[in-house]
Length: 233
Image 1 (spheres, rainbow, N blue to C red):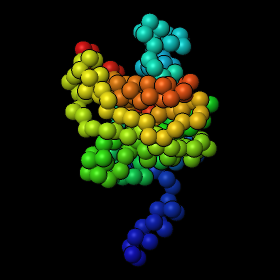
Image 2 (image 1 turned 180 degrees about the vertical axis):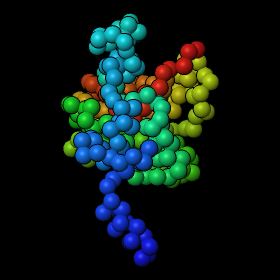
Image 3 (image 1 turned 90 degrees about the horizontal axis):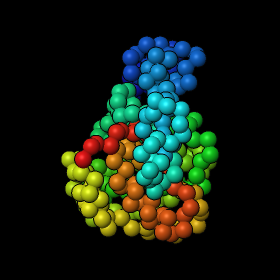
């Protein structure tokens, strides 16, 4: 107890250091736990507003989304699935470091200028949530809702366990998720944001979007920490 108190007291007296590289965090840093150098890795880049993938041009929407737009309206993310952000996601998800959810949410908040009326999250099957002890997407969503001053509601239930999406082509991914979710709460707003830790293929959130649109929601956005490229079929 005394050793823990002494460590905390002395740490508070010392200048803050970056959690990634251990360099001193300058006063101009936007976040007290990342130095200016490491913050370069989360600098916002030009992305397609619909799919969230990086773009080289200044167009708002990429060519693929112009031809075949997703069911959601916009994707807001911190960056690609790479260090240092991927490390924080991993520690939250697999090392039970619950406090990382608030840190990750703080990186995303400045990029959301007009928040949705209601936030929800991608559900886990009850067996996986029981084994893990929590839903990482829900933890991030709760922190986002608090910072954005918006309500959070658990709108979905995963009705059956599904096999991993990795290694499946588009058709197989869609079949794997067929009837895997249902809406468990009425939705009385027109604009909803679905929160997930990592958006890869988009197959899961696509199913959730359809449920919301069928329930009368007009606009669905995706709030995620990392956006990874969709694997080729």
